[in-house]
Structures are given as C-alpha cells and as structure tokens.
Image (cartoon, rainbow, N blue to C red):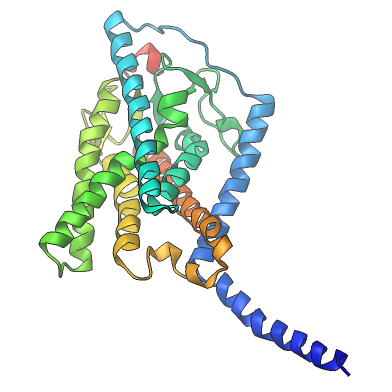
Length: 325
C-alpha cells in the first residue's frame, strides 16, 4: 500500500525537475561554461602532446644584442614580471576583501589559461616575434592542427613575457573599470553606447601607454603588418593601428564591461545570467568556466584577426635584428 504512493511521488519529482534542469542548461552561464570546458580540453590535449614530445628550453644567448640592448630587453622582462605580480595581487586582494570569488579573479584565470593560443598569431607565417634573449621555451605551434608557421627551433615563447604575460590583461582592465566608474559617477544617466565609448577610451589610453613599452624595448614586436595601417611601418618597432584597437577591445573594453555589469546590475555580467538557478555549490565552478570561455574566445579572436590581417596585406619588415628573427 505504501509502494504505489512512493512511486507516484518519485515520478512526479522527476517530471518536475526535468524541465528545470533543461532550463538551467539553456542559460547564458551554462552555454559559456560549455565553451570554457571545450577550450580547456583542447588546451590539455595540445599542451600535453607538446610536453611529452617537444618541450624544451630555448637556447640562451645574446643573439647579436649589444650591452645596451641586453639591458633594455632585460629591463622589459623585469617590468613584465612586476606587471604580472601586480595583476595577480589585485584580484586576490579583491577576493579577500569581498570574501568570495570575484569576477576579476575569474578574468585573471581566464586570460592566464589562454596562453596556449599564442602561436595562432603565427599560424601561417611570422606575424609577431619575441626576443630570443628572454628566458623562454620552444614554441608549441606545430601541435596545433594545420599550423605551418615559423620553425619552433628558432621561435621562442618567453616564460615571463609569453607564458604568464596574459595575466597583465588586468593592467588594461583596471583603468577601463576606473574609466567606466568615473563616467557613471559624472553622468548617472549615461546611455549604453556612450558608456561603451567611455570604456573604449580608457582601454585605448591604457593600450597607448603599455604597447610602446613592449615594442620599443624589443621584447615583443610585429614582424609583419599592413604598411598603410601601421605607425613606423617598415621598421622593427612598427605598431599596427588595428592591433592597438583590437587589443583595447580584448584586454580592456570587454572584460572591463563584464566587471562593470557585475558590480552595478542586479543580474550581474551578461555571461553569468542564470547562475542563480544552479545549485549553490556548482555556482563558482560554472561561473569560472564561463569566464574562461569568454576570455579564451576573445583572445582567440585577437590572434586570428592579427594572423588574417597580416596574411591579406601584411609585409614583413626587412630590418629585423637577429634576436627578433
């Protein structure tokens, strides 16, 4: 007599929870979490293959650098380490202050995890180059499907200027968030397009301050660029204008807006919509995966755009120093 009611109750519960589970899977946060999981899976496959069969340190040496050149490139490496440490410390401090996993910390993890996509920029030829004088490993580009870029034996990926450099996206995010907060305080009824313009202006200011340091020091340069869209075209220190705009969007505006919406809107950042419908224990993990998905997709867009633009109209600069070839 008790079995039938029990069975009916179980069936009803299953029928009630099934639509709720399907609804959870249709939320933005779930979709982005799936994208993040796919990126991390691909990353694990590529990097494990490289670690097993091709990983090694890049040979150290001066590669024709003068003493002054060594000092300049070495100073840039030291600045990169300092920038990465600050970029890691800021989100950790916010987590401690708020006693929770903040979106800034999730963005840090997301951009850091995207380092494996760096060789995409040189997918079909040399577009960007690091100084061989920096502490570096060999390139894992050949382990990406279809990759036919520079020889990994002659093309390094620096440890502090490459592997951990994407942590420094926070150096773009912080001034962008500040610019958005300042704009909202001054103009409380600011329209969405003008808010985006304010964020882009702040991100561009950060980019214009940081990019020349990287390029003029010789730590990282654009070996190939479209001359008509490039400052100092034809020289090893050339700076493509389109790269400046794309970097401002990817490192500054997009993550900056995510932080802004998470701080000021009841529903939080757009990619995290639907998070409250999930079990409490799953929320931090799903949120982190969704931000990883966004960050990796944005960085993939950056590397693909650099590669495609250079392939369509780029010209390799003829005066590359030996340490940048």
